[in-house]
Length: 202
Image 1 (cartoon, rainbow, N blue to C red):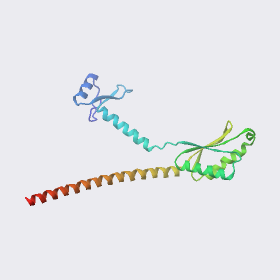
Image 2: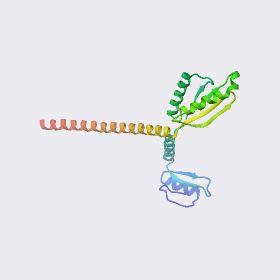
Image 3: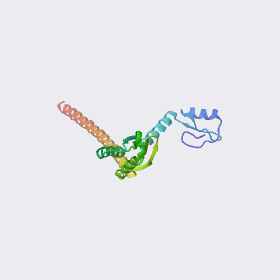
Image 4: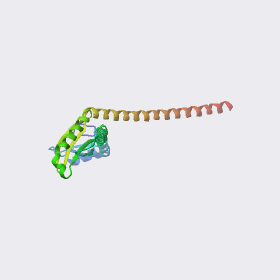
């Protein structure tokens, strides 16, 4: 058993451990059930759960989950459509998303799969400054699929921008708190001034 101040108590009967926890107004929590003997700790279970939830929340904030976007191309796509769709793929990547780009073949177009591959290879070349190929072009049914992910540089910029936003919000909150404290100080000064004035009249 581990005591409420983190000290090693040693092996004790369950009844004694429960009494010790009760004597300090805390809970007896099994923190390592698979060890032999099991390890229990005296602590405030409510606070313990809160701290775990807080750590999980902070860990999730640090993670950037990539969402999957999709963009469809045609084997014989014209230049305007190609540029328009490639521009949107770039925007998805710069926002920190994965992008599944694919060419759909209809009917006799299945005989010209090389045209579809050329389209996807050109997409890779156009976006080489912001993207990394996670899945190379490959046929799946009537689709030739490819997956692009943001480059390491893009992800660094995204994290940097997020950190700047968080810091800016924290600074705004601090300034707001400082302003409130200043307002309170001014009110106290006015009250003291009025009180002093009234005393002089008396």
